[in-house]
Image 1 (cartoon, rainbow, N blue to C red):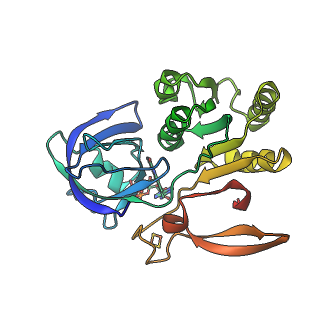
Image 2 (image 1 turned 120 degrees about the horizontal axis):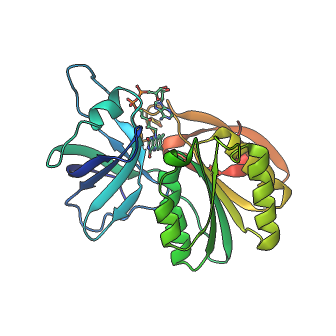
Amino acid sequence: MAAIDSLSIIISNEWVNDEYKHLIVKVNTPALTVEPGQFFNLLCPQSEADKPFFRRPMSTYFADPVSGTIEFLYKVVGSGTRTLAKLQTGDTLPILGPLGKGFTIKDHYQHILVVGRGVGLATLAPLAEAAVAKKIKVTAILSARDQNSLMSQHRFHNIHANVIEVIDSNHSSKIENVEKLIIKQHKIMPFDAVYTCGSTRITTLLRRIAMEFNLDGQVALEQHMACGLGMCYCCVKPFNVTTGTQTELRNKRVCVDGPVFDIKEFIA
Ligand SMILES: Cc1cc2nc3c(=O)[nH]c(=O)nc-3n(C[C@H](O)[C@H](O)[C@H](O)COP(=O)(O)OP(=O)(O)OC[C@H]3O[C@@H](n4cnc5c(N)ncnc54)[C@H](O)[C@@H]3O)c2cc1C
Ligand code: FES
Protein backbone atom coordinates (compact mmCIF):
# COMPACT_ATOMS: atom_id res chain seq x y z
CA MET A 1 0.00 0.00 0.00
CA ALA A 2 1.11 3.60 -0.59
CA ALA A 3 2.91 5.40 2.24
CA ILE A 4 0.79 7.80 4.28
CA ASP A 5 2.04 10.66 6.43
CA SER A 6 -0.07 10.26 9.58
CA LEU A 7 -0.16 12.32 12.73
CA SER A 8 -0.08 9.49 15.24
CA ILE A 9 -1.04 9.77 18.91
CA ILE A 10 1.19 8.22 21.56
CA ILE A 11 -0.57 5.46 23.50
CA SER A 12 2.51 4.53 25.56
CA ASN A 13 6.29 4.84 25.43
CA GLU A 14 7.82 2.60 28.11
CA TRP A 15 11.35 1.37 28.86
CA VAL A 16 11.85 -2.35 28.17
CA ASN A 17 15.34 -2.35 29.75
CA ASP A 18 18.03 0.33 30.24
CA GLU A 19 18.58 0.81 26.49
CA TYR A 20 15.35 0.07 24.65
CA LYS A 21 11.88 1.60 24.64
CA HIS A 22 8.59 0.21 23.34
CA LEU A 23 6.52 2.87 21.60
CA ILE A 24 2.82 2.32 20.84
CA VAL A 25 1.04 4.86 18.64
CA LYS A 26 -2.38 5.03 17.05
CA VAL A 27 -3.25 6.38 13.62
CA ASN A 28 -6.67 7.18 12.25
CA THR A 29 -6.03 5.60 8.86
CA PRO A 30 -8.17 2.47 8.66
CA ALA A 31 -6.72 -0.78 7.29
CA LEU A 32 -3.11 0.38 7.34
CA THR A 33 -1.62 -2.94 6.25
CA VAL A 34 2.09 -3.30 7.00
CA GLU A 35 4.24 -6.19 5.75
CA PRO A 36 6.86 -7.63 8.12
CA GLY A 37 10.16 -5.86 7.33
CA GLN A 38 8.58 -2.58 6.24
CA PHE A 39 9.39 0.57 8.18
CA PHE A 40 8.12 4.04 9.05
CA ASN A 41 10.06 7.31 8.95
CA LEU A 42 9.46 9.10 12.25
CA LEU A 43 9.63 12.90 12.59
CA CYS A 44 11.22 12.98 16.04
CA PRO A 45 10.43 16.11 18.08
CA GLN A 46 12.99 18.84 18.83
CA SER A 47 14.16 19.66 22.33
CA GLU A 48 16.44 22.29 23.88
CA ALA A 49 19.41 19.95 23.63
CA ASP A 50 18.56 17.88 20.55
CA LYS A 51 17.39 19.12 17.17
CA PRO A 52 17.12 16.08 14.85
CA PHE A 53 16.49 17.35 11.32
CA PHE A 54 15.80 14.30 9.17
CA ARG A 55 13.21 11.69 10.02
CA ARG A 56 14.48 8.48 11.63
CA PRO A 57 13.61 5.06 10.13
CA MET A 58 12.09 2.43 12.46
CA SER A 59 10.90 -1.08 11.65
CA THR A 60 7.37 -2.00 12.53
CA TYR A 61 7.35 -4.18 15.63
CA PHE A 62 3.61 -4.71 15.47
CA ALA A 63 0.77 -3.25 13.41
CA ASP A 64 -2.94 -3.84 13.78
CA PRO A 65 -4.78 -2.67 10.66
CA VAL A 66 -8.16 -2.78 12.43
CA SER A 67 -7.38 -0.59 15.46
CA GLY A 68 -4.70 1.52 13.70
CA THR A 69 -2.16 0.66 16.41
CA ILE A 70 1.50 0.61 15.37
CA GLU A 71 4.37 -0.39 17.66
CA PHE A 72 8.10 0.24 17.53
CA LEU A 73 10.95 -1.16 19.61
CA TYR A 74 13.87 1.26 19.61
CA LYS A 75 17.29 1.75 21.12
CA VAL A 76 18.04 5.22 22.47
CA VAL A 77 21.31 6.11 20.75
CA GLY A 78 21.35 9.73 19.60
CA SER A 79 19.47 12.99 19.19
CA GLY A 80 16.42 11.56 17.38
CA THR A 81 15.80 8.61 19.63
CA ARG A 82 16.56 10.77 22.72
CA THR A 83 13.71 13.14 21.87
CA LEU A 84 11.52 10.20 20.87
CA ALA A 85 12.14 8.73 24.32
CA LYS A 86 10.63 11.86 25.93
CA LEU A 87 7.23 11.51 24.24
CA GLN A 88 4.33 11.02 26.67
CA THR A 89 0.91 9.45 26.31
CA GLY A 90 -1.34 11.83 24.34
CA ASP A 91 1.54 13.59 22.51
CA THR A 92 1.58 13.47 18.72
CA LEU A 93 4.22 12.10 16.33
CA PRO A 94 4.17 12.40 12.51
CA ILE A 95 5.01 9.00 10.99
CA LEU A 96 5.42 8.31 7.27
CA GLY A 97 4.86 4.78 6.02
CA PRO A 98 4.70 1.93 5.53
CA LEU A 99 7.91 2.25 3.49
CA GLY A 100 10.17 -0.17 1.63
CA LYS A 101 9.86 -3.80 0.62
CA GLY A 102 9.14 -6.37 3.31
CA PHE A 103 10.03 -10.06 3.67
CA THR A 104 8.81 -12.75 1.27
CA ILE A 105 7.48 -15.98 2.76
CA LYS A 106 6.80 -18.56 0.07
CA ASP A 107 3.71 -20.76 0.51
CA HIS A 108 5.61 -24.03 0.05
CA TYR A 109 7.99 -23.38 2.99
CA GLN A 110 7.64 -25.81 5.89
CA HIS A 111 10.34 -24.59 8.25
CA ILE A 112 12.19 -21.28 8.45
CA LEU A 113 15.04 -20.00 10.59
CA VAL A 114 15.18 -16.47 12.01
CA VAL A 115 18.31 -15.27 13.76
CA GLY A 116 18.16 -11.90 15.49
CA ARG A 117 20.10 -9.78 17.89
CA GLY A 118 19.04 -6.72 19.86
CA VAL A 119 16.72 -4.46 18.01
CA GLY A 120 16.80 -6.79 14.99
CA LEU A 121 14.14 -8.76 16.83
CA ALA A 122 11.76 -5.86 16.27
CA THR A 123 11.83 -6.72 12.59
CA LEU A 124 11.88 -10.51 12.92
CA ALA A 125 9.01 -11.02 15.40
CA PRO A 126 6.31 -9.95 12.87
CA LEU A 127 7.99 -12.13 10.21
CA ALA A 128 7.86 -15.19 12.48
CA GLU A 129 4.19 -14.51 13.27
CA ALA A 130 3.32 -14.17 9.58
CA ALA A 131 5.09 -17.48 8.85
CA VAL A 132 3.20 -19.32 11.61
CA ALA A 133 -0.07 -17.86 10.29
CA LYS A 134 0.81 -19.69 7.04
CA LYS A 135 1.36 -22.90 9.07
CA ILE A 136 5.14 -22.76 8.63
CA LYS A 137 7.33 -23.92 11.54
CA VAL A 138 9.76 -21.36 12.94
CA THR A 139 13.08 -21.84 14.68
CA ALA A 140 14.25 -18.58 16.27
CA ILE A 141 17.77 -18.01 17.54
CA LEU A 142 17.66 -14.94 19.77
CA SER A 143 21.01 -13.39 20.62
CA ALA A 144 21.90 -10.76 23.24
CA ARG A 145 24.67 -9.49 25.49
CA ASP A 146 23.23 -11.18 28.58
CA GLN A 147 19.99 -12.73 29.82
CA ASN A 148 18.56 -9.33 30.84
CA SER A 149 19.15 -7.87 27.37
CA LEU A 150 17.12 -10.58 25.61
CA MET A 151 13.90 -9.09 24.26
CA SER A 152 10.71 -10.22 22.60
CA GLN A 153 11.02 -13.87 23.61
CA HIS A 154 7.28 -13.86 24.44
CA ARG A 155 6.40 -13.00 20.82
CA PHE A 156 8.23 -16.16 19.65
CA HIS A 157 7.01 -18.38 22.53
CA ASN A 158 3.40 -17.29 21.93
CA ILE A 159 3.49 -18.70 18.39
CA HIS A 160 5.19 -21.91 19.61
CA ALA A 161 8.40 -21.24 17.73
CA ASN A 162 11.39 -23.41 18.59
CA VAL A 163 13.25 -20.70 20.57
CA ILE A 164 16.99 -20.96 21.20
CA GLU A 165 18.56 -18.20 23.31
CA VAL A 166 22.28 -17.42 23.01
CA ILE A 167 24.16 -14.80 25.03
CA ASP A 168 27.61 -13.22 25.06
CA SER A 169 28.14 -13.66 28.82
CA ASN A 170 28.41 -17.48 28.54
CA HIS A 171 29.89 -17.36 24.98
CA SER A 172 26.92 -19.28 23.52
CA SER A 173 26.38 -16.39 21.05
CA LYS A 174 29.80 -16.96 19.45
CA ILE A 175 29.34 -17.22 15.72
CA GLU A 176 30.92 -20.73 15.60
CA ASN A 177 28.42 -21.94 18.19
CA VAL A 178 25.48 -20.36 16.35
CA GLU A 179 26.65 -22.10 13.17
CA LYS A 180 26.74 -25.47 14.97
CA LEU A 181 23.24 -24.89 16.36
CA ILE A 182 21.87 -24.03 12.92
CA ILE A 183 23.40 -27.09 11.27
CA LYS A 184 22.09 -29.33 14.07
CA GLN A 185 18.56 -27.93 13.67
CA HIS A 186 18.79 -28.22 9.88
CA LYS A 187 19.59 -31.95 10.27
CA ILE A 188 16.59 -32.46 12.59
CA MET A 189 14.19 -30.61 10.27
CA PRO A 190 15.61 -28.93 7.15
CA PHE A 191 15.09 -25.19 6.73
CA ASP A 192 13.59 -23.84 3.52
CA ALA A 193 14.73 -20.30 4.20
CA VAL A 194 16.82 -18.26 6.62
CA TYR A 195 16.16 -14.66 7.71
CA THR A 196 18.04 -12.09 9.72
CA CYS A 197 18.35 -8.38 10.35
CA GLY A 198 21.11 -5.91 11.16
CA SER A 199 24.18 -7.81 12.37
CA THR A 200 26.88 -8.17 9.69
CA ARG A 201 28.40 -11.23 11.39
CA ILE A 202 25.10 -13.10 11.54
CA THR A 203 24.22 -12.08 7.97
CA THR A 204 27.59 -13.28 6.68
CA LEU A 205 27.09 -16.61 8.45
CA LEU A 206 23.54 -17.08 7.14
CA ARG A 207 24.61 -16.13 3.60
CA ARG A 208 27.27 -18.85 3.74
CA ILE A 209 24.80 -21.42 5.10
CA ALA A 210 22.17 -20.44 2.51
CA MET A 211 24.71 -20.95 -0.28
CA GLU A 212 26.09 -24.21 1.14
CA PHE A 213 22.67 -25.83 1.64
CA ASN A 214 20.98 -24.07 -1.29
CA LEU A 215 18.38 -22.33 0.88
CA ASP A 216 16.43 -19.15 0.26
CA GLY A 217 17.40 -16.29 2.54
CA GLN A 218 16.68 -12.64 3.20
CA VAL A 219 18.22 -9.91 5.31
CA ALA A 220 16.70 -6.62 6.49
CA LEU A 221 19.45 -3.99 6.38
CA GLU A 222 19.93 -0.88 8.45
CA GLN A 223 21.50 2.04 6.64
CA HIS A 224 21.62 5.77 7.33
CA MET A 225 18.66 7.34 5.56
CA ALA A 226 17.36 10.82 4.88
CA CYS A 227 14.24 10.88 2.68
CA GLY A 228 13.33 7.18 2.98
CA LEU A 229 11.54 7.61 -0.35
CA GLY A 230 14.20 6.87 -2.95
CA MET A 231 15.01 10.47 -3.89
CA CYS A 232 18.21 11.48 -2.08
CA TYR A 233 20.39 8.38 -2.78
CA CYS A 234 22.06 8.63 0.64
CA CYS A 235 21.24 4.99 1.47
CA VAL A 236 22.90 3.39 -1.58
CA LYS A 237 24.85 0.15 -1.01
CA PRO A 238 26.54 -2.24 -3.46
CA PHE A 239 25.10 -5.75 -3.91
CA ASN A 240 26.22 -8.85 -5.80
CA VAL A 241 23.38 -9.49 -8.22
CA THR A 242 23.32 -12.80 -10.11
CA THR A 243 21.38 -13.21 -13.35
CA GLY A 244 21.80 -16.63 -14.90
CA THR A 245 25.52 -17.37 -14.73
CA GLN A 246 26.56 -13.70 -14.54
CA THR A 247 27.20 -11.93 -11.21
CA GLU A 248 27.64 -8.18 -11.22
CA LEU A 249 28.04 -5.43 -8.66
CA ARG A 250 24.93 -3.25 -8.58
CA ASN A 251 24.10 -0.25 -6.39
CA LYS A 252 20.70 -0.27 -4.74
CA ARG A 253 18.82 2.12 -2.47
CA VAL A 254 18.13 0.43 0.86
CA CYS A 255 14.97 2.52 1.46
CA VAL A 256 13.06 1.58 -1.71
CA ASP A 257 14.84 -1.46 -3.16
CA GLY A 258 14.92 -2.90 0.40
CA PRO A 259 15.35 -2.73 3.33
CA VAL A 260 14.86 -6.49 2.79
CA PHE A 261 17.26 -8.08 0.28
CA ASP A 262 18.18 -11.55 -0.94
CA ILE A 263 20.87 -12.66 1.52
CA LYS A 264 23.01 -14.05 -1.33
CA GLU A 265 23.35 -10.51 -2.74
CA PHE A 266 24.68 -9.13 0.56
CA ILE A 267 28.23 -7.74 0.64
CA ALA A 268 29.70 -7.31 4.14
C1 LIG B 1 14.99 0.36 7.78
C2 LIG B 1 15.50 0.66 9.16
C3 LIG B 1 14.83 0.17 10.24
C4 LIG B 1 15.29 0.45 11.53
N1 LIG B 1 14.59 -0.04 12.57
C5 LIG B 1 14.99 0.23 13.82
C6 LIG B 1 14.25 -0.25 14.92
O1 LIG B 1 13.25 -0.93 14.78
N2 LIG B 1 14.70 0.09 16.15
C7 LIG B 1 15.84 0.85 16.35
O2 LIG B 1 16.20 1.10 17.49
N3 LIG B 1 16.55 1.30 15.31
C8 LIG B 1 16.15 1.03 14.06
N4 LIG B 1 16.86 1.52 13.02
C9 LIG B 1 18.04 2.37 13.28
C10 LIG B 1 17.53 3.77 13.63
O3 LIG B 1 16.99 4.38 12.49
C11 LIG B 1 18.69 4.61 14.16
O4 LIG B 1 19.13 4.05 15.37
C12 LIG B 1 18.22 6.00 14.43
O5 LIG B 1 18.05 6.65 13.20
C13 LIG B 1 19.22 6.73 15.28
O6 LIG B 1 18.82 8.08 15.32
P1 LIG B 1 19.39 9.02 16.45
O7 LIG B 1 19.13 10.42 16.02
O8 LIG B 1 18.91 8.62 17.78
O9 LIG B 1 20.92 8.72 16.43
P2 LIG B 1 22.05 9.46 15.59
O10 LIG B 1 22.54 10.60 16.43
O11 LIG B 1 21.61 9.75 14.19
O12 LIG B 1 23.07 8.30 15.57
C14 LIG B 1 23.52 7.69 16.78
C15 LIG B 1 24.26 6.44 16.44
O13 LIG B 1 23.41 5.54 15.71
C16 LIG B 1 23.97 5.24 14.44
N5 LIG B 1 22.87 5.23 13.45
C17 LIG B 1 22.10 6.27 13.09
N6 LIG B 1 21.23 5.90 12.12
C18 LIG B 1 21.47 4.59 11.88
C19 LIG B 1 20.92 3.66 11.00
N7 LIG B 1 19.96 3.98 10.13
N8 LIG B 1 21.40 2.40 11.03
C20 LIG B 1 22.39 2.06 11.86
N9 LIG B 1 22.97 2.90 12.74
C21 LIG B 1 22.51 4.16 12.75
C22 LIG B 1 24.95 6.36 14.15
O14 LIG B 1 26.02 5.91 13.33
C23 LIG B 1 25.46 6.70 15.53
O15 LIG B 1 26.47 5.83 15.93
C24 LIG B 1 16.45 1.24 11.72
C25 LIG B 1 17.14 1.74 10.61
C26 LIG B 1 16.68 1.44 9.35
C27 LIG B 1 17.41 1.98 8.17
S1 FES C 1 17.02 7.53 2.05
FE1 FES C 1 16.82 8.87 0.35
S2 FES C 1 17.10 7.51 -1.32
FE2 FES C 1 17.11 6.18 0.40
